[in-house]
Length: 133
Ligand SMILES: [Zn+2]
Ligand SMILES: [Zn+2]
Picture (tube, rainbow, N blue to C red):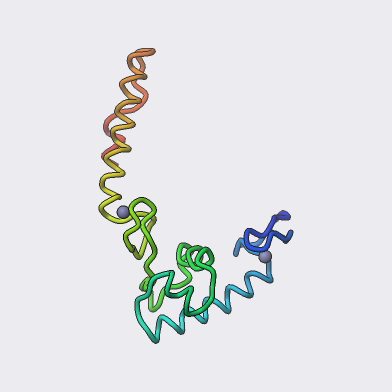
């Protein structure tokens, strides 16, 4: 356990599993409750809408979604924009479409690396089997 800066208010606090100082954590519990109530009443909503209705900062809502705190009966009801193209998504960082083109790009980058490595020193550092996992 060490001393850290709270990512929300910037104050120093004793490190804890919530990743926030006790004050901000207490606030988040209140937000979580407010947002949960809203979702139960209205069903699916975007982060923007939740922000308008509850006044909770979008940044905080996103963080709570990503730590899995805003599930209603185990289901995510809040949409937020895909990191790459901005379409609304309910889980992960990018939509399925970007996900498939992204993994294709990654494979291409790795293939390039493989080529340049084998040209440079004749070593094969990456095997094609790595991509199948
Ligand atoms: Zn704080
Ligand atoms: Zn996308």
